[in-house]
Length: 234
Image (tube, rainbow, N blue to C red):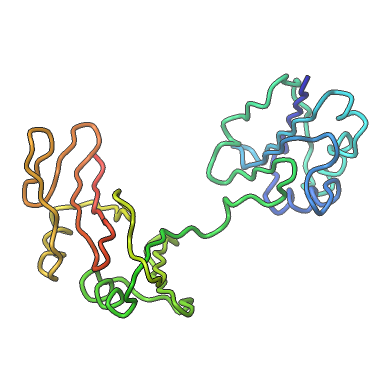
């Protein structure tokens, strides 16, 4: 039966955690017998959840001495909470700062940059559209046969060139809005042509569809037929 251990470190930080985990984890992943590891900021410091294949695998592993090692890293006292028979993480470990590691995967992707990706058969045409009509800024990180545009909060849009254009029929990029009417009007003034619909259940008013309980959306296409949307949540 799987065996879970929860460590709490009042006053601990991510830097303390990284220092202490280096003392008990091998460089290429989790210790033998450990199948899941989660860590994240908690209201009073740092919390670590480790799940082992069994109680025996935990007691015989290097991580059984994790508390002293973590005390060295965090310079804070730690408490071993009652052991849980399943791997459900506490609320603090489901926050956006949570670090997750599964057996065989030392590095997860929560700290990596994320980009929406589109294709284009004419990158120069796409660059003119996104810069002139949408007002996006080309990133200095753009590489050959790619266009990389930067957005707010670390977001980005990547477009790469290929001989075959868009094959998707769904919304591929969403621009989040706090005032969709204002944003749509500005885009129309820049020459963007919006898709309009008129059915019993799906109708645009001034290019915007209102979906109760969800929000308001307006769709348009780039020169390669990629479907883009401006969306304002309800």
